[in-house]
Every structure is written in C-alpha cells, then in structure tokens.
Length: 406
Ligand SMILES: *Cc1c(COP(=O)(O)O)cnc(C)c1O
Image (cartoon, protein in one colour):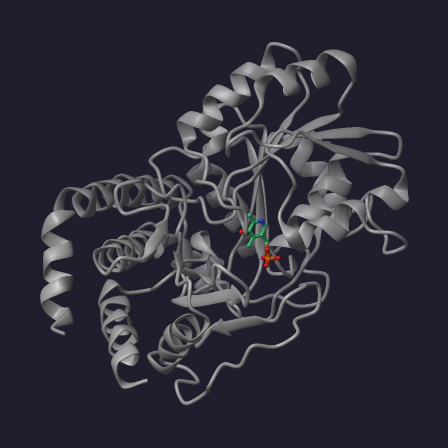
C-alpha cells in the first residue's frame, strides 16, 4: 500500500486543523518571547551554582520567567522536582495541612498520584490525615450536581482539577471547560483551585491560571521543557501558595532561598523558549496519526475531527500482535535505542503487562515521540509527543509498513 499517498490525503483533509495548531504556536511563541524580554534574561542566568545556591540568579530568574509566561503572581521551577508526580505531591503537602480536606472535581487523579494521595504507610496525604474526596466524572465530564452537593456540605481547603485524561478514556479538558468549571465551583467555595496541568501547556492560547486557577503544576520532561530540559517540574500561581510549596521542596523557613545546579540552566531556558513550537510539532504528529489510522479503519481517541486537549492520542488495535508490532516500529524509528525490541513486562503498579516504546534523548520524556500500552483488550496504544513533525511522519510510515512485513 502507498502510505505516503495516504499521509498526503490526511494532510490535505485536515489542512485547516494543521493551520490552527500553527496559529496557536505563533501566539504562544510571542507570549514566551515577550516574557524573556520583559524579564531581561541574559547569558549570566545560565551560570551554574553549587552548594546552597544562595543568590542563584539563574534559578530565581527561571521562576520569574515561568510566572510571566503563565500569567501568575509567582512560580517555582526546579531541577529538584524529580518528576511530575513529585511536583504535584510536594505542592499538595505544601498547600494542605493535617485535618484538611481536598475535593477533586475531575474523577480519580492520575495513576501515579494515587499512592501519594491514598497510599497506606508510604507517607501519603492519607497517612498525614489529609483526606481527598473525588467526584466521579459523568460521561467524561465533571458532574456539577455532585460537585455542588459536596461543596455545600463540606469545607474543602483546596479544589483540584486534572486537565489531561491520563489513562482514562475522555478528552483533555479545554481551557473553556476549565473556565466554566472554576466559575461554577466559585459559586459555592472560595478555596484555591489547583490544576494538574501535565500535557496541557501551550496546547491553547491561554493557560488555566489565566482563567481563574490559583495554581498550575507540571513536569519539565513534558510540554514546557521543550524536550531540552533534562529533568524538573514547576508550580505557578498565587504567591501565598507557591511560597508554602517552596518550604516543602527544601525546608521550612528556607524555601526558595536555596537550591543549586552545577550544570548550566541554559537548557531550561531554551527549552521553554522552543516549547510552543515543539508542542505544536507533537500535536501535528498526533493529528496525522489520528487521521491516517482512522482512514485505515482504526478507532482513535480523540478522533482527528476532535481537538485533543493535550498531546496524546489513543489508537485501538483490537489485535494484540498489531499493537505490539506498531509499538515496536515506533521504537525502531527512534533516534535513541532504535535497535531495541520492546517486550511486554510486569511494570510495578500496573495490573496487566505493559509495553513501551521510548527511544528518547531524555529518559521517559513524553514530549518526545513515545508509545505505551497495557497489554489487554481493546489493545489501545497511547501515542504522544514528537519533537519534529517530520520524525513522526517517518515513524508512522514505518509503523504501517511493519504490518505488511510481519
Ligand atoms: C504525566 C502526568 C503526571 C505526572 O507524571 P510523572 O510521570 O510523574 O511526570 C501527572 N498527571 C498527568 C495527567 C500526567 O499525564
């Protein structure tokens, strides 16, 4: 079969959607550029620091830059956030105290956060007598009646929204969805709204803090690191909240006064600078995958017609071998470890075996082209990232060819 013809057709059919993605990238690039200029970033901010890192201007300027970009009063950006889960966990421990309650408006939080919130004897929020209620989603949407009831009956210290679906089968919430949800919750509560913003940065022209959220949190090996940041996370929002979180990241009374990094900060700056473009590359790759796979009769979620609220597409293969061969072809089309053959394995914390293609420059980076799946019907493969659209196009062609030579 001539896959390059199929790809061309998909590009033509969805030309308008490809243009919309570019338009958002242009808007966000300008936003980021203006933030750099306003913050007077200069080469001295890339300088490494050691020890306590007192007076580390590079660290402080980076936080200022994220705050400016995301339209918040304050931010804390650090290579010492080890992952998105760590960032969110530190943030929750910063904002909540024993005896406090938090309400999750968007169903059950992402798998990796589950232990941090509900785990037993692992130092979870529950272990510290911080309780978290979750309002289940209704047809993939927040259940406003149930939220209203909860907010009228309980006093919550914070409200929590997860933007991207994780492994749930729903769309990522749009900024408009989030704006409505925040204003609805605001009728019954004045508690701060915290957003798990993972995979959402630069997907739209506005970020959640620009539509009323008090705090956004995310990982630097996803969107805002632009595939250049080697590790880290960020929180951005109201200064009173960010300050409390800084006290948890380092130590009470010390907060963001310390924290050194002996490697240059340049990649964090440059990563943020290219992030709007890189996110657009990933979104275009996702759109192409969705369009082409749908043409071949596969079910894709969200479909090419629908705007994904993030950078992830899920393809149902309904066939174990096809899914595995597609996943292996993603790995074989990767710049790093392209020779490796992914095998389904018993990954800690998952019930089914999981297969993963992750031939990435930064370990586990999912802004780079990657794919993963629990090996169970309907054999859905989660495909995300892609630093260059061209790479995704090449990888997709090879994936499709892999069906023929299998
Ligand atoms: C990726 C992600 C996180 C954080 O996961 P890490 O792997 O720890 O970085 C949290 N929430 C959502 C929705 C995510 O997609």
